[in-house]
Length: 133
Image (cartoon, rainbow, N blue to C red):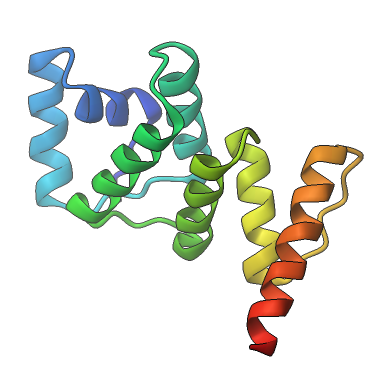
């Protein structure tokens, strides 16, 4: 089993260090690699914080990566929803993942974060409304 870290994914996405980007591309394009959610979170954090990449672009880049290389990602559906939430809100990606878990796994998120709690509550109302239509 091979597991990619955030630096590996960043080289693939950014193509900023040509030799490393080519090496990452060769491996990621030819074999199934495990990408832990923690690595995706760190990758999003670095793209946003260090490289100042806009949220929608980050979401697009991560989704493109996921669809291009077909990695092994635990809770794939939650990751996709978390990315959507990230593009649509001002919540950080960890909170978006928690909201996705709340939605997909019908989990109760224990938090004192009022913004996160409000988002989860509003999202639950929208999900309930959509089910009733």
